[in-house]
Image (cartoon, rainbow, N blue to C red; front, side, top):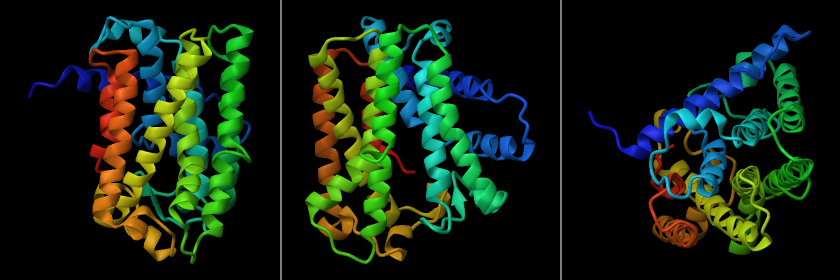
Length: 307
């Protein structure tokens, strides 16, 4: 069976990301902690955030090499460092999201959640350790100028912290058993999911050496659209997907009485909104790179995915 150039790029890039992630785990003074960390990271998943980071970097470093770059060039892509950092941080957030005090999910990425495979205390500590490892990687790995490194650290801390992902998680918990407005729900989605996706693109651009503020703002707009579309599609899949497809329990949002876009707007209008955001993101990418690029394909995956 013939695979498309993008499918080859996707497969090869995921392999490089996974190898890079595996290489970050060294001997630990607490073997059980290291085992729990690796268990969650190695579970795989879509790797969307690191892929977006790699694709954004490639957009500026290989503008004439559209769909399929030479695979031999990929390991030298400087975006591997921020890509791995953002995946480590994302995995920490999933471990904590699944805890009984949060979403209380037994499955993640098709396997028992970290607190089910180990125990609750180990899962909390594994998440803590992955979060700090993400910043350690950004500080010590890769060949970056001080300006680049500080910019990427600033983006990740802002996207993940009390005015980013964690704020979104807090608002999401407070919104249980409440009916939110579309504006309130959009804010939660943008914070909880969107900020980290946007940061992935911005960090990829900075790794490529982009410094022009107008271009970075353009990349941010693309990320904001993708991030919201991604979470709307998550809401949709929670309604129409099944546990096997999703790799986690379907219907979890309804069980927790959460406000979602399908509950607020209906399924059809939610699908339309996700497509509209995706189309806007594609148009923004097109102004930077008219030719087909991995980033364009990744944008399409946001609303075409089934998990």
